[in-house]
Length: 258
Ligand SMILES: O=C[C@H](O)COP(=O)(O)O
Image (cartoon, rainbow, N blue to C red; front, side):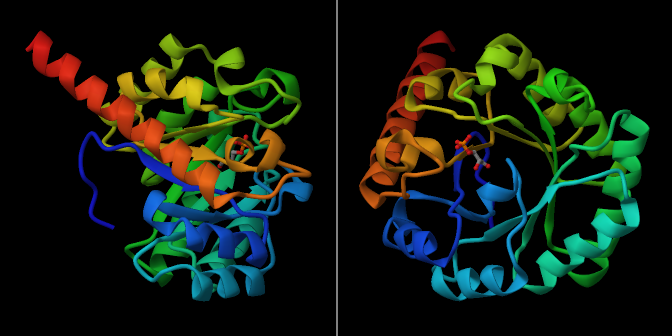
């Protein structure tokens, strides 16, 4: 995908083929379809055949992403799983560094992933994901992610929330620290992706701080419920409309200030 600078991309996470069909109906409003299995965790990994079916379902110009799971500190296991996601058709490979308690462990895991995936597909986009609520699960500090991603050769650093209990990204990492995360990622030549029960009300701040990718599920599911609700094309369209509105407002304020 050609990256237009200063454009916030929308990544939507269906839980299977049926929801991917709903994403396909809203394809003009989203940028990346992210395959996951929410009942296996925040970044739960889905089956290879589901990734393949979803790749066949969504328009060819939309990249398919796959989460490799909330992974343990087992670099070989994770590298092999990441290759499985790439072979199944995902070109964005997201890894949740759940079981890594130090930056060194996280770098170990991500180096293996980068090598496994890029040996197979050099243009794949590898995302190292930490958790905004890392303090609740004892994993690596969220602000360490840009450096982990840089040192392991990833393309992006991401934050999501590990525990989906209604608390949101900004409850754990407030906007000024998210801005620092984005700044560090950009300084390292990486893209910055943010997620974690993000709502339309968060889009102003996410736009202002220069986020590259926003990941959502709950906000585009019926009733705002990521577990019992299903992705609704009309909610995807409405979310995109809010993104576009904030992008216009931000561009206007930058032009005025300049
Ligand atoms: O990668 C994005 C996640 O699927 C976000 O899900 P959520 O918006 O329900 O927290």
